[in-house]
Image (cartoon, rainbow, N blue to C red; front, top):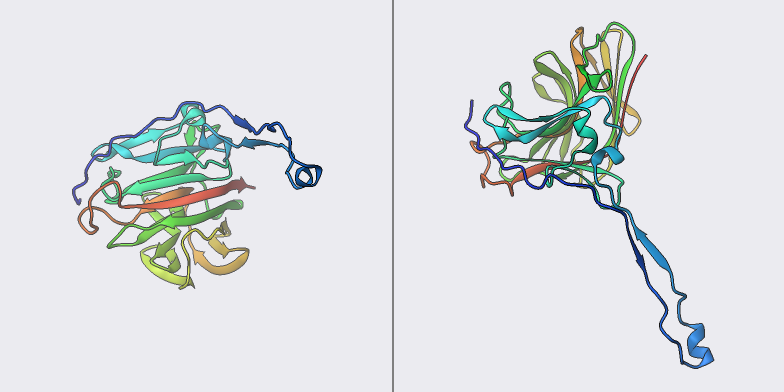
Amino acid sequence: MPSTRTLVLAGITAAVSTAALTLSAQADTSAPDERAATPAPYERVAARCAYPSEVLDLTNWKLTLPTGEDEDPTEITQPELATFSAEPWFQAGSACDAVRFRAAVNGVTTGGSSYPRAELREMTDDGEEEAAWSTTEGTHTLVVTEAFTALPADRPWLVGAQVHGGDDDVTVFRLEGSSLYITDGDDRHHHLVTDDYELGTDFEARFVAEDGEIDVYYNGKLQTTISHDGDTNYFKAGAYTQANCDNADPCTDKNYGEVRISGLEVTHS
């Protein structure tokens, strides 16, 4: 496995209270005509969220971060995840409308991968158990509203959402430069969604698994159908950077992949 370097977890965030800014009127001694053009005083409230769980429902998820010990990255489960934030890897946006996931190329990796991640893994029973469902029983759906916001230098590859089965991914949304792909197993270029993706563009990714197949949608339009028969499947969402210090330079925490997620919903029926 390629060598990795451990990142120091920066800033476990404590609660941040909502701040209100009131602009008061100053004494007005101007002429009547001048006063008519003066805007009235107003009050502006800045939205602040202490934790990503205030933006996304994280009840049935656990988090893996690109920090910790070699091949033993930091994992946060419920109930701790409900009051957890880690700048800059996992934090709510200032407007409380999205969550940032960031993984640098020198981040810690899991034992089964050579690439770092700041990523959610599907769970059940209020986060107590790892999810594992069958593509041949029931219907299983993940809907993610997200945007790729940064790509690592030298190797600008990043995964933003996936269906995982057992020890390997089944299908993912994968950005390489400006080309957005849907994969099928080891075929990373199975289906080209667009070759003109612009960083920061929000889109809806949807996986629907049933009857031994996975339908994959982009902004509500069916893109491809993946054949897959398995009973150890689960969803993942976040920033899974497809670069490390062996293939990307600089090897620092300033070289990273980043995803912004503003909507996250899983249903099973």
